[in-house]
Length: 274
Image (cartoon, rainbow, N blue to C red; front, side, top):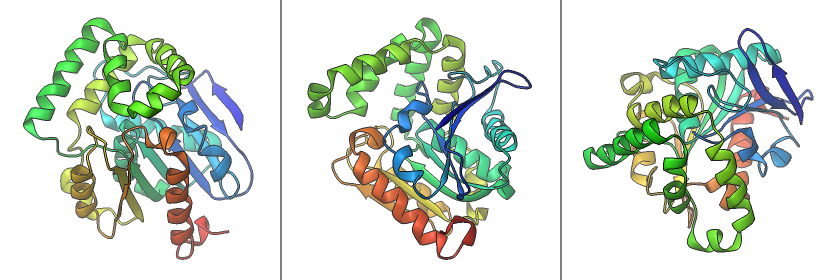
């Protein structure tokens, strides 16, 4: 992977595997970075040109304005595609990245070849909404540090936490190092925009996979099922035993899911085929 940093108009940061293969764009979750896809990139790049971005407000990418909406995040992805010289790509979004991928598909339909929504949120219940809005208040006051310990508890199994102390220490450090304004703006959208584009989802006409973990308490199987039901022809998958951070803790299962889906649609969409 080649790191690309463009510091002007606007600042963009992404990794690019290069090569002639069909393009796949990876969009990470809030508080994370393009590094979260470390287990996916080596597998995907055997067949695809892989672009792993730093989301708006994260890493080396530009900070969002305080009043940014999801459209700004979608436009940022489109700007990365322009910068990389890519007309169309399959988008793979995780958590907040799944919301952003949804927004790209609705706002820039002509740029999207296929859509994978991993561990995404949709139509939270009132009690869950109240809980996450309380977290918004916490991070607005105290920054990413307010969220990280609870996030690690929710995201990973007890076994993973016990066996991967070094990884989690590095994750905690990078999470806390996020720009507090960029994180707060992004987390507010993650908390409030779970129904983004709800009325337009039935008009999405790209191959779509919606998947989450069996034990994901924030992006539940019920949410994923309801979201998939709104998108014509969408495939729906549950990864047995997985919690939220499925691409990390259940990397092999996630990779198989992604490669199988992309291969299956490649038979009908030549730009994603061999």
